[in-house]
Length: 310
Image (cartoon, rainbow, N blue to C red; front, side, top):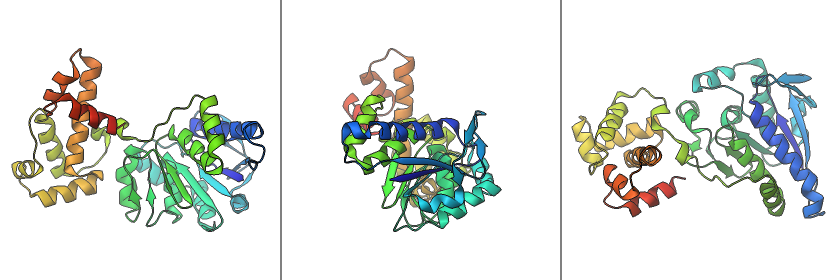
């Protein structure tokens, strides 16, 4: 399998390093696991003979982005931007436009395209994600959803595979992405690499999502969040909250879906788990007591919800 890391200037250092280390470790272990597994050939393609990563590392490039079509898998690592607005601006850079053009020229019947974090944006820009499921880093969801409304964004998954496109969440989800690609090649090899490098499974981003940091400016959703936070220790009915902030349940559901990609109930559950996690870390209270402080009659319900969001 021929794999190309399609990098741009100021790409995210740890993301590129994780991909290279895991893929090259897989190739080093391949013959030991099973000599019949086809080789993994990894090259770095970019806009020039070398690029400088976000940490200042000088990364040699093996070939131009125009060589992408000669590989079975094209991977777009994170671009190194730290906000949704900066990521959208980066799409206009010359090197990013070259990456988008190279990905857009690939044949979906012959190639697999993969990306993590901000690297999912060039893949979407190239048209590979239209009418498909995908994920990206949780704090990029609002900007991504606004620019690419035809993409079904999975707000929980760490890795989403939809036919010949594989996407992953935030920066260290490059690890999950690399293992997912190795697993598509050989499950036994992926298991061996995960064990060798002591990589734990992280199937969901849910535990990392902080509602406060999902940037949006919808005053109705902000009023909903404020009301819910102020009453987390009490039973919360979505219809009652809607009436309390002067809107209808249907309007509230539509607006939270547009702003956050979640239902009002999901937002309430996340807020409750967020507060429960904080109380577990900062107090000596039992989970039974904490459950009553975040609106649950018993700890088992809270425990199940916390487990589901991890």
